[in-house]
Amino acid sequence: MFRLFKHYIPNAVMLLALLDLGLLFLAGQLGWLLRASQIGIAPGATVDRLVPLGAFVLILWTAMVSVGVYGNDALRSMRFASARLLVAVSLGIIALSFIDFIIPGSTFWRSTLLYSMMFAVVALIANRIIIGGFLGTSAFRRRVMVLGAGNRALRLKKLAEKQGSGFAIVSYIGMNEGEQVVKEAIPRAAVHDLGQFVENLGASEVVLALEERRNSLPLKDLLRMKTMGVHINDFSSFVERETGRVDLDSVNPSWLIFSDGFSSGRAVSSAAKRVFDIIASSFLLALTFPIIALFALLVKLDSKGPAFFRQQRVGLYGQSFDVIKLRSMRTDAEKDGVKWAEENDPRITRLGRFIRKVRIDELPQTWSVLKGQMSFVGPRPEVPKFVADLEEQLPYYAERHMVKPGITGWAQINYPYGASIEDSRHKLEYDLYYAKNYTPFLDLLILLQTLRVVLWPEGAR
Image (cartoon, rainbow, N blue to C red; front, top):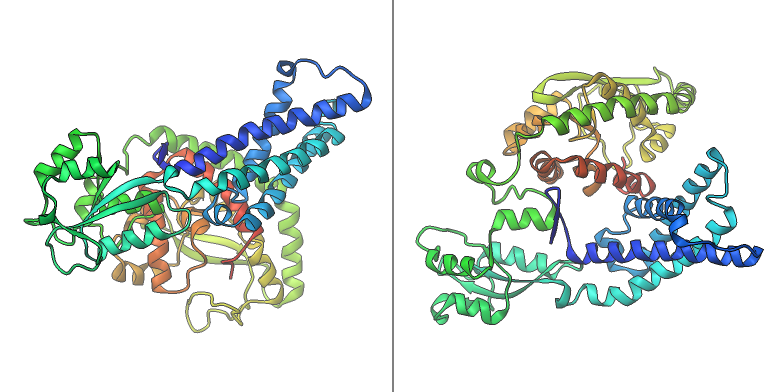
C-alpha cells in the first residue's frame, strides 16, 4: 500500500488514479485540437495551454474522487464504474462551464469541453477495461504470510478473499497456539527454516495473527525476516491499514498507546482546520441562507411546530452544546424519550423524509461550526443519553470525544446510518481511526467523499 499523510491507499487504486490523470490531460488536449481544426485556427504549443489543461484535469479528477470512482464498489463492477464516471465527468464539465461564465474568455469553450468530455469518458472506461483485469491479479497484490491458524487467521483469509483486496495470503503457519481453524495451515514443526521459507514464497510481509502470544512468538525467526527486508506487522495494525478502521475485537490499551497515531504535533493542523472552518462556514451560511429560509417556511407549512429543532449533544472533551437542525420529525417525536431513528420511521414528516435524504436538515449546523462547537469533519455528535449508554457498553468510546464532532466524518462516509449498539460499534471503529490518523489530507478526502453520500444516500434515515 502507498501511505500518503498517514492514510493508506491501495497500490492498484494509486496506479489507476495516476493513469486517469494522464488520460484526462490527453482528453483535454485532443478536445482542443479537434475544435481548433474545425474552426481553422492554429492550436498553438501545449505549454501555452498548461493552465486551462491543468484546471480541466484537476476539476474532473476531483469530481471523480468525490463521487467514489476509486471506491471498492467502483473497482469491482464495470457497470457501476461507468455510471459514476459519467456522473463525475458531467459534474466536472458543469463546474468548468460555471468558471467560464464567471470568468469569461477563451479558456473553456463549450464546444471544446464537449469534445474533451467525450474523449475523457471513452479513455477512462477503456482504462478500466484494460487495467481492470489486472487489478485483482497477484501482480498488483502484496504477498502476505500469516503466522497463526486460529480465528484471527480466518478473519484475514476472509478479508483477502474480498474483491478489491490489496493482498494475497500465500501461506498460513500453525504456531501451536490452540485450535487450528484454517485447515490448510502448515504446522510450524514442518518448516525447518521460517526465514528461508518466507524467501522461497516471495512474501513481502508477515502478519502475526496469534490468538495467544505467550510462548508462541518466534522472536529469532521474526528478527531474521525483519533483517531480510520483510515487513512484520501485528494483526490490529494490519487490519487498521487494510480496512480504514480500528478493530475493537483485537486492540488493547497498550496497542493504542504505542502504535503510530494520536500525534501531539497537531497544533498547526488544528489551527489551519479552525481557520478553514471559519471561512467555509461563513461562506456556506451566506450561500445557503435562502435555501435554509425556504425550507424553514416549508417545514412550517408541512406540519405544526417550529421550523428548527434544537437538541443537546456531546462535543469536544465531553462538553455539551446545542445543535440546531431543520425539523424533520413531529414535535412529539421524543415524548417517550430519545431513541434512534428507524427505517421508515413514522415520526418523520413528509418533507422531513426528503430533507434528511439530501442532508438539507444539516445545513443549520454550520452555525455551530462557525461558533467553534463543531467542525465540518469529525465524529457525529450524539445526545448525552446515548453517550452514557455507549460508554458503558463499548470500549474506548470516550476517546472519540478527543476531537471535535463534525457535520460529516470518516464513519459517516464509510458506514450507513447506525441505529443499534452493533452499528455504533462499527462506527466507533471508523471514528477511532479518524481520531488516531487525523491529517488535513484526510479531512479533504472526507469532504470530497461527502458528495458521494449526498448523491447516493443509501444510509439516510
